[in-house]
Image 1 (tube, rainbow, N blue to C red):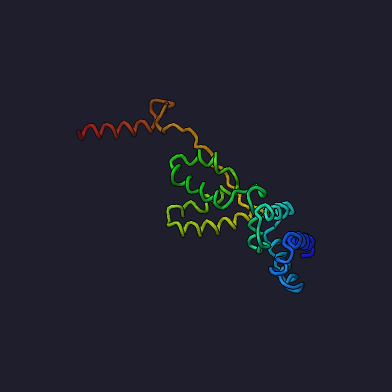
Image 2 (image 1 turned 45 degrees about the vertical axis):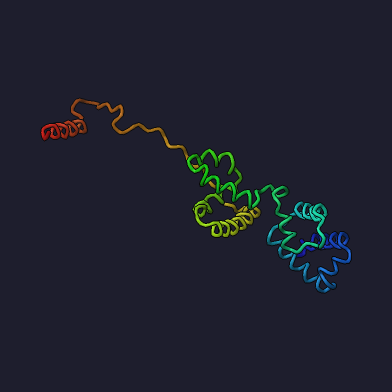
Length: 202
């Protein structure tokens, strides 16, 4: 907790400078602000928010001309933007998984190689593909839950590694090019007997 305290203080100092009296209206007196900071610190640690994410979020607060200081959930959403994390957004991930399992379902391998290269997308596709054909509400609920889980795993370095399937070996049919070592090969003798019996019945 102590490690993240300076970052939290810097965030709140920046917000106070940006919003002036609205900062006090949003967060209350010093005791309430300290309580709020502790909650933000716990969330920052849990979400593994980086300095770059914080800088980006504060820049976006100005860029978006927010009229009030952001709530914790709003600030975390800004921190998790794909442009700073390098990870696909929830909307992008959902779109690609739906396309892969509907429009491009007959050429999934090619689509996956082009559009699901990010480790998070590969994992989400495995976890959510079976829900694509369910109703939209069910899919979105499952997608949101799995996206949050995959995002946390990716940040912590515990995201499962998806191993690519090995190409099927080119194996000829068992009888193709079969050459016996001697004319009395037992296999060919049995085949010949079955053939003779079949012809006799005809």
